[in-house]
Length: 535
Image 1 (spheres, helix red, strand yellow):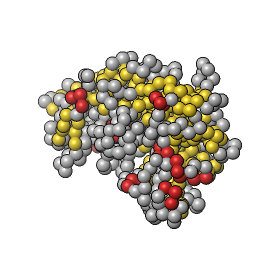
Image 2: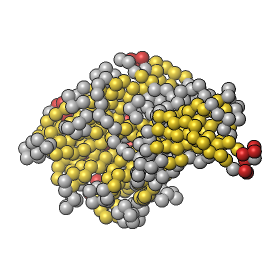
Image 3: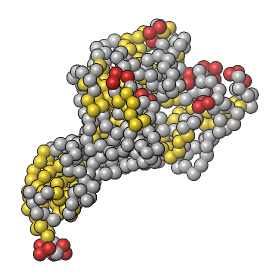
Image 4: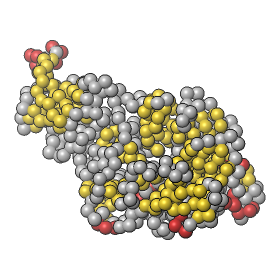
């Protein structure tokens, strides 16, 4: 299998590498290597460092951008990128990686949504944060938070929001569905725990996006018996002996709005439940080893799943359930290959029949956490293999048409990943850097988030009388086609300053200019390698 490594301006980090399955070269972190995977670097935006893509395209893929948010040490961003690894947009860097970066519709407007972390406990997989909603200019419209006086967090602190950071769903009513964990005193003797134990209950909330008001609340413990859980007491699930060690019996990791109810994925129960909005009660549940309320064929078995979604079959009128079927729960333990699972649900006769399983036959994935699946009977399926730091696209017949590696397995993975369309028109202006070398002026230009830019115009300025205060004299010197995120122009010019203008990137189709920037006297002295490729 042939993989293309897209390399732009690559960060000069020292990496120790080892060769993985099928010849792919992975990188491991050391004290001298602060990253586990090579990243791109840009002259005009040195603060942005998206991962290098290794990809294999074997067929015609659907149009759209890749949405990925690698979890790495240090300040990091979520990224929108092309299939071949060109950066489109990077979110503002934060201490923790954004989760669930994805476009949604809000009041019929295109918006970009992600979970922003405020607290993370990797040992017990506990997180707190908020939901950021931006418009298509990347201007923050809302930062939705959860504060519930009845909520008892495992690790209380000075946080503005206690929702977990695994899910965020904008409904057709323009409200937001989120989930939080609640440390609850509970008798755990039925599962071998203490009678005066603690349970990490999963609580689903519907919030008013504009006011943060709680509109709806549903607790898993009200309807789901703890005996459903497949999670052992102890370790990352908590031993149930204290509030801080509350046992994570349910672990709701996805919420989907379907017709008059919610489809919830209970990872640690190997189950999905459908809750009716009108009653707040479970209408039915499906379980991966025994079927739950359904008879389930052997091919439809699932465990430790993520991202359960329901759809209506336009042809038959039936209901389709699809999910990212992890089938693994421990790092380094390869139980069964991870797949994308599609089930036809007969809600009258309560039967679940396997319609399709999608997996990587040549390089099986064993995702022990995280993952997502986008599927439609009318288009391609897209799987993000979570902790494997891989993504894959399949056509409607189940053939792989595109495969991507964006990080080392278990390091730098994205909780979820998506491929979809997006158009961005940044409110901020383009940026440029210029320097002189061997009689030429090298100009590097970019515009974070602009999807519609077709070309760049470069303007040069001569400082009158050598006196900067006397002002600049402008004259256009070059027009270059856009080449990925960062475009380079080489000028035969004595200019002392430059300005760049992007065409086609504004919402109204107008051009936008950068600030005027001085030409640095020596590219080499400024640490700029003009011979490196730019993306």
